Amino acid sequence: MHHIDYMAVSEKVIQQIRKGAFLTVQAGDDLNVMTIGWASLGFLWGRDMMTIMVRKSRHTYGIIERASEFTVSVPMTDMSKALNICGTESGKDIDKFKKCNLEIFPGQKVTTPIINTPGIHFECKIVYKSEMDPSLLIESYKHLYPLKDYHSIYYGEIKYCYSTIDEKG
Image 1 (cartoon, rainbow, N blue to C red):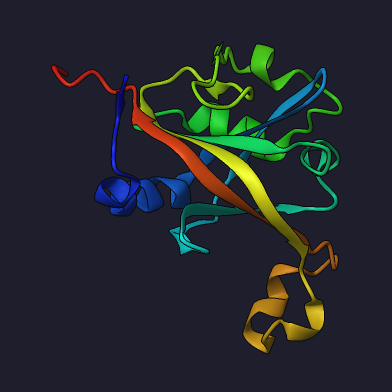
Image 2 (image 1 turned 135 degrees about the horizontal axis):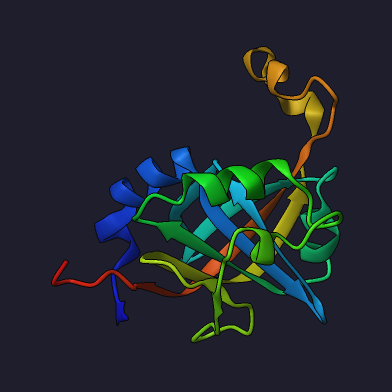
């Protein structure tokens, strides 16, 4: 595991997030993982940031609302089966870690774990969150919310970004 500059790998990270990445959240004893397909990397308020979105209808929402941090594990090997399960099944009904044989690994700078997979990992501290205001949504995006289950947006200061990819492989 070695520290990397998130901007140096941002294109590769965003390409994979479009296919899916693991968002892990923890509040007390409640721990859940879900697939995300949207995220943003950037520089806000003088800090390195990752923004992620969680719909209020998701089990993860109740946990992240009580959390102060999150991790995102961007797999660089084929994890499509686990990403599919974590994106279609609810942690309210099943233990996704067990069903997908996902091992967790302690965070280095935060208490929320990462998914132990070869990839690029982000450990983030939530610095701001906001509910979407649907009245600001432009018409061409309204089809993404047929059930009106809008996202909340979480701005996470990147506390640590690192790779667990074997450089020999």
